[in-house]
Figure 1 (tube, rainbow, N blue to C red):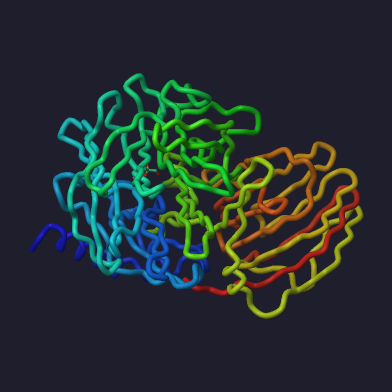
Figure 2 (cartoon, rainbow, N blue to C red):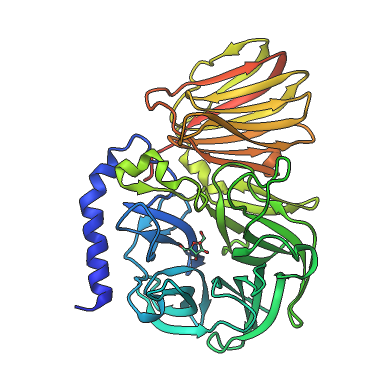
Length: 483
Ligand code: FRU
């Protein structure tokens, strides 16, 4: 039997073995993409191809830890209902034996081209990385063509996560990199035919420009047009916390600029985090057939106490964020859940005009473990106002300080921890709760907080509180279970 077939059989056997344990987990998600068993990390190869959305993902089917990754595969017609497809890539060949790492997909001559990093470690633990191509005619089965990009001079083997796009009749690729003097960088390549790739140089970081000295490694770069600008999204490692910023072990964010593709020169503004919550990393975008720029992120961060998540006991770990549409507004990337997600809403919303006056209140019909809450026309005159989800996560807005805070009970030691952002004002909140995940979109999606949290499963309460006066219009929907 081929190594590829053996790995596939082993992975499907792991799914059969642990599936019912995953099913029994009260923290299993209802409408977020999660692995059938094992560990999921980065979104890969996200594309709408011949009408169908494909989302591949970094998958370790054999344990809830990292290792020689597979490319798992979900497909969807509507970004709401997803089908788990056959495994796309197994780490079966010499050039990927320690993992088919992250990458992207693009259509070429009617076929689906997937570019990914072949990760290889020798006996002493020395790493090599190869940027590989695999081609599919049906979007399901891939024919591996092997390495197409080898490591250029000036970089360490921390060189991975190719993202490919077409522009003005040529192909371009950005790769996450570390320079030999240990600076995070994005490398830029170009090609006419998708197989012969030329190194154009460093696009950002690596001792140049505004990101000259910005951590020791950039992972998962993604460069795209958005509303007349060129946005570079990437995940830097090695930033020091700075006030309310950069609180997680690693970050994920963007810079806005202008790319001169021919010369490879990229002028850009300062870095902003895409998400201010506890669990967000390695996002990837695609432009769909409606011309929308859509993003999925991984709802976790590497090396952030991953084994302490209670889902590990149920043989699964991590999930994706909701798909979010990106727009550029007054110098920021705004994120909103794609319109299709309204399809998740059961029946008509429960609606309340709410006026709180130094009180704590639960509202008729407002509870649940998989819900969407919309708070509009929020007015907090003085003091603070909060929304508590179950007995665990709490969203607090202090109008005195103009600070928004997400608190949760740490899944490591139970101590309350928080993440914060300063706002100009609080106008609206859109909150998605899914058993053990919460995503909060503030002021039309200018700021986003994403986190896992683990409330007591029987506690489905939602509690509102104001230290002084707070008013808003509330809508609440129960959301369907689609996974
Ligand atoms: C980001 C990352 C990528 C790598 C992949 C391996 O989370 O470290 O850089 O390709 O995960 O699973």
